[in-house]
Amino acid sequence: MGAPLKRSNARHLVTEHLEELERLADTAGAIVVGTLTQQLDRPDPATYVGRGKVEELKAMVAEREATLVIFDDELSPAQGKNLEGELGKRVIDRAELILDIFATRARSAEARMQVELAQLEYSLPRLTRMWTHLEKFRGGIGVRGPGETQLETDRRLVGHRIKLLKERLVEVTHARQVQRAGRVGSFRASLVGYTNAGKSSILRGIAGAAEVFVEDRLFATLDPLTREVDLGDHQSVLLTDTVGFIRKLPHHLVASFRATLEEVAEADLLLHVIDASHPSWEEQRLVVDDVLAELGVQHLPMVYVFNKMDRLTPELAAGLRERIDNLAPGSIFTSASSPEGLEPLRALLREALRARRPEVELLVPMTDGKLLAEVHRLGEILAAVPDADEGVMRVRGRFEPAELARLERDGAVRA
Image 1 (cartoon, rainbow, N blue to C red):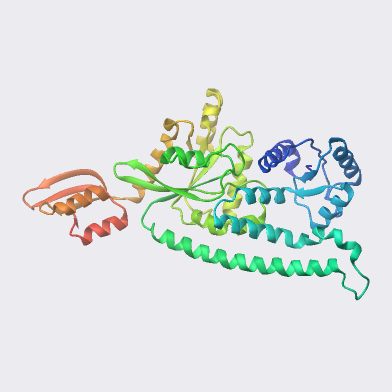
Image 2 (tube, rainbow, N blue to C red; image 1 turned 180 degrees about the horizontal axis):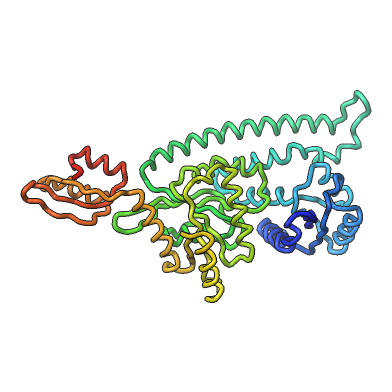
């Protein structure tokens, strides 16, 4: 059920939004038997949509024997309760559907905790709906019926569980900080983007990591995954795949995954992956930019990576390249379907790494074979010329700041 406001741009995209909602329902394991739309001046405080549309929806539910009704927009606890009473079926909104998908897709203990926390915070104000079957047992003024007692008990239990999960996630955050401390000095790039834009496919292709899970479904992966990418010439970067974003992403979910998304904040470069073949890639780009701003990482260096270029005709691909070169210079175009299609990304990472590794000339004693070997192992060597008069090897190359400091401690001298 889609009900965009008349004054919003959503009414122009309602069909596409419902198609995405259908894909979300498919990911959750549901079979869609019908859709319904209504444009609203403003949501009805009782049932979100108008009375006539509720009756139409009720008839459709009976005719098609639907067992679940999904709204594309977030419902208040009262609206959800009233709609379930009118329709006699379970009613959920887009946020609850996304939370359910995350619950089934979470693999690691951390992801499961984050999803549970988001679900509990979402359900806390909606507990009354879950105990409507006890309403007939409630007493009058001054008499607490079993339903009310159970509701208060549940609220306390949920509140306690939320507090416990937040404490555990703080521990997870500290553990991630320790892990990141071990990667200090390495160049780190993070893949961000709309769900199903192809981030995991890019990571698997460019890192040669066959174990990276890839599926053509929304939210195929939730847990961040980091792999080392060999760029050649003794160069490598750490590339991290992160959870995908989506329009109307539940706020509780963003807050719960903040520990995971700290990987993004620690990156030296953000690679914003965009599905170039999607008809609404521009809207998806804005959705991701908004979430990045909410996370406070919009200041980090970022490059747009237009992926799935192999799905475009040559004419469309040429037109897109020309347009993007004018709108967002520096963007790159990739295809994870072949190794050659990822070469532009490799070239970008090599250039970003070189910009961080300034070219220097080191003087290394020719008698110190161990130090010479270390120089060649740690750096990108551009030239090595012996200086017999000085008894040194003049080595010109690029080095990470930490590596350069280490070589200088071991006896290398800058020319």
